[in-house]
Amino acid sequence: MSENKKYTIVVKHQRVEVSKAIYYAYHEARETERYQNKVIHQLELSLERFQEEGVHIELQFTLYQQTIEDKLIEQEQLQKLTLALAALNPEERLLIRELFFNGKSERDLSAKIAVPQKTINDRKKKALMKLRHLIEN
Picture 1 (tube, helix red, strand yellow):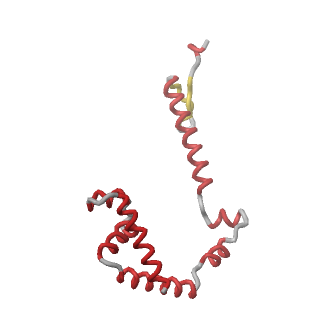
Picture 2 (picture 1 turned 180 degrees about the vertical axis):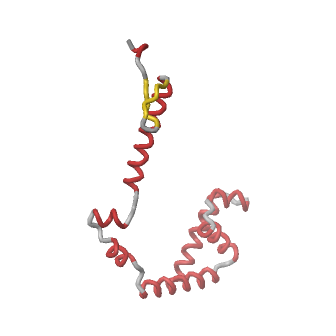
Picture 3 (picture 1 turned 30 degrees about the vertical axis):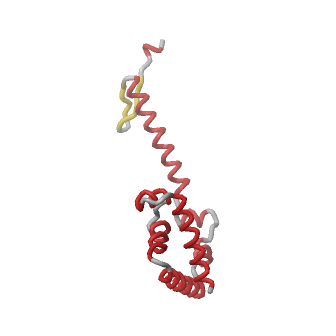
């Protein structure tokens, strides 16, 4: 009975007879597209959608805006950090720069400068303690 089954799809408002493989491929693609559209809609962030859902986005922006005081505190902390970094010896500065500013791992830095990773870790801890002391005083 299934051998006589006809498979059709709609193309430009007309039914077209196709093979079983094309029929299943077509419907699989349609379902995939529907699923992707559903996911996109769920992840979509738009002002209209927020308004429909009762989220006051303007309020959210004002809550998360950095105040002048926050900016001044951040600037002061950056100045302290810059001065503290300048007070480190060149070896400690290199270590801090590579690990924290350039995003290298201790293992990568260890391989690069041919020093055991444990030594890198110990030097990092020592340099961070020195930085903390310099910044707090």
